[in-house]
Image 1 (cartoon, rainbow, N blue to C red):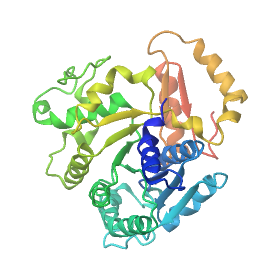
Image 2: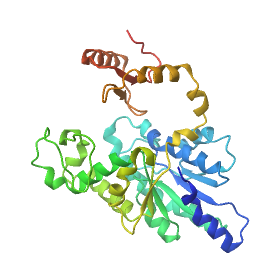
Image 3: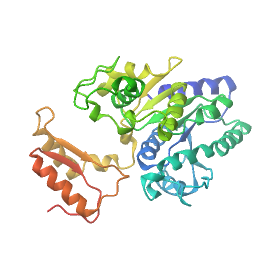
Image 4: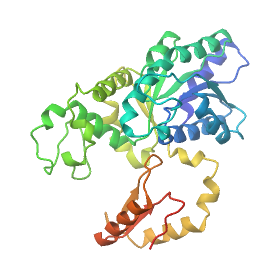
Length: 339
């Protein structure tokens, strides 16, 4: 794991300017838990290397971010206003606040209006001689590339996915016209990809096969274009796990941009040590060590976004038991109990 490459440019700039200012990195998460949490871990990792971090976010999101980073004095927050737009309920500043995913596209489109406030933050930093050495922004915030270029600051892209999954989605997106007539159960062969398992069209995200003139796909196309022209991509993974697929991922970027594997970022979270020594962790690892056959355990997790009722959890539990396979299931409900 090497964070050195993220700070090398800043250290060189400091030597050239003989400036007493700390190396500075700006982090701009997308307003969703699964996108924000690993970037908070990245912020903590950088601050542990004596790097100043500024997290860009909106007022509502700043509350939880401030609580998470309270013990890290080198991490600061720059608040910008979330726009009020037609078609989006008032006060929604995070995907967890959306009444349904029907509002997801309006939410994505609303984030474009954060560009001017973001540029004002960069302008203030410029006037204070405190521009960052780079901006790490979420994939969905593709417009940050134009802003960063205006101030001469490299933009690094962040995804929540690993190397192989990102490369597969990008390849499927590029080659989507060639996949239209392939059966959903037939194995897929994607050019330039060494897939270590059988992949079918049914395994791909639903949107990959959608018409690319669909409004959501148009948005994805815009941010993908910005990503290809960014300085590089940060991946929450590590070379020992996915090193064989890094070159495949890098092939989708221009100007010899690199993919930096600096994960797992959760290791920098505040609760890492208690988790590693907890009884549950030891029990789970002991149980997993008993199932050494390839693909013998089903892992189930619906993340932080899904809101699943207790009745639905009952049905999922029943289905998992009926599958006849050992399974590991992460359940977030405070009220549901296994029967």
